[in-house]
Amino acid sequence: MRFLAGLALFYLGLHLVSEALASWPGRRHAVAQALASPGASLFWGFLLGLLSGSGSGLGLLALALLEVGVLAHAQAALLALAATAGAAPWVALLALSAGGVGEGFLALGLGLFLVPTWRRGGLFLMGLGLLFLGFGEMAAGVGPWLPLAERVGSPLAAYGLGLLLGGLLGSANAVAAIALLLPQAPWAAAGLVLGAGAGTTGTLLWAALGGRREAFRLFLPLLAHRLVLSLLLLLLAGRLPWSALAWHLASHALYALLYWPLAGAYARWAEGLLPSRRVAPKYLRWEALDTPLLALALARRELARVADAVRGMLVQAIRVLAQEEGGEASLRALEEKVDALTRELVLYTSALAPREGEERAVRLFMAASELEHLGDLARRVVRQAERLWAQGLRFSSEGKEDLLAAASRVLSRLERVGTALATGERALAEQVLGEDGGEFFQRLRRAHLRRLEAGFAESRASTLAHLDILLTLETLDQGLARLAQLVLEL
Image 1 (cartoon, rainbow, N blue to C red):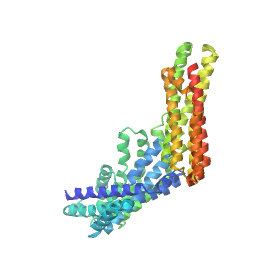
Image 2: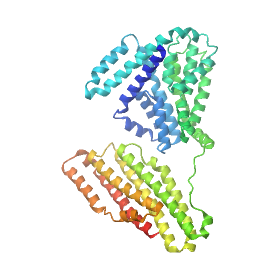
Image 3: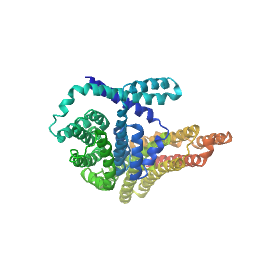
Image 4: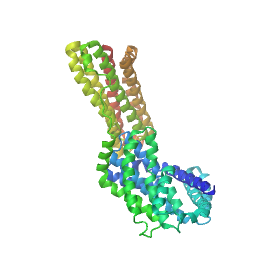
């Protein structure tokens, strides 16, 4: 029981340390840099793991970025592996867990926590204090059981136990902390550490079992990679007199470094096992062309699907603007869907024209083209913002609020046009046509001018990007008016 209480304190300490570092000002820059290339994912993943102490948490972040298209498979895998390697040195701090160290950190952290401006530092120190206290309790609790470690039949049995604990606890660091308590059985400690290094991939398995398909595509190559390398290292466990900490640090560094040259092959293997879903029309039926009215209704429903995909692109663009994270790549999957469905609609419309009449077919063609153009404009908004952030600049808080207000207006209008397409509710399209956006966008430009006159430094630095994005959003707004008119004419 005392061991479990110590493990709980250890986990709480890791959580507090991660929370304290989550608002680190350079975190967003580091995440953005990790998106640049596989090598950047390796370097910045290690740095983020070192600063946060949470390899599993960053592994789940890599999965989320893979799911939205921000990271390619190779980059997501390298980010997850490098983050775990970066978090591994946190176990080394437990070597400082001599009597009084944990209490000292807690007392100092409490003092800082009571000062609002130093609260984050206080959380960090209290987290360290709980780590040390938890380790001490674990050591006291596991003491009576240590003689049993010497009776474990083989390093392979210790490896199996580490594999199980790593999968259940979801933390290689926690199992490594347990292994530090086995100095009299170094081969058992090595087996525990190596097994946990592979077992911690189980966090992705739990995500996959929750219905996240990309988690399987990331889990399988990472598990295979770690299993093969850890078993090879296990063969050396009896020959190299390394400590549990040395095995922990070296194995995770090796997993990350050796994955890099194999990343492309692993990605192809995962794609072969679990192919990505292909975008295909849902409603278009070529046999329905013999019944033009049915074919036209099916084309309208498919057009509504395109509108919904464009809506997804705009929602993601707004999220990128609001959080100042992510980029153009996060829209790639939706953009490919828009392009693929638009192409199918154009081909279907060209076959429908001789049967239904060119006028309505041309309007369908124009509506599909207009939606595809709106998707391009949503991507342009993100590209223009990315260009500003790449220079180390940011919008002023007032300027960002104005841009988000303009984007929200456009999103609301797009949702109404999409609903009109899907349901045939003409009143929604007429409502969009009846709204004049000219005065709205002029008011936002005047507000920006007043900020420039007031000498706001951020507004002056970001003025070109601000006006470019505002113009792009206004073009989006005008395109929606044209689309609403086409919907009424269909």
